[in-house]
Length: 85
Picture 1 (cartoon, rainbow, N blue to C red):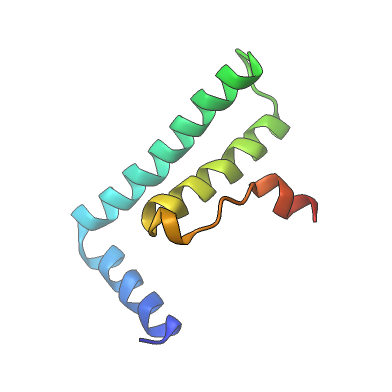
Picture 2: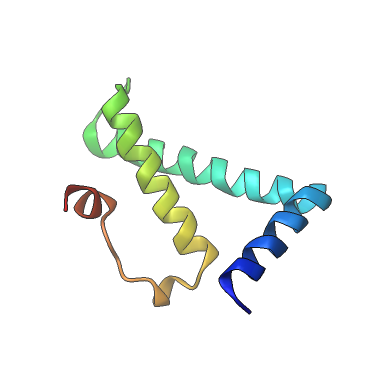
């Protein structure tokens, strides 16, 4: 299957299957929640600034991709290393 076909299939499923759409939304949201909690604990922060939120958002997106695809197939890449390159 070509990437464009897979993309179209995914979009169609997200548009037509509310349960499937909710599962995506829930998984994305939980990746953010988990990343924020971990970040606050690691950096001993109670409040977050915009830079913190940016770092957390990128980490959450990376975590989502690891969950979506086989973790073993994805290298452990730190999102900050990619953004700083």
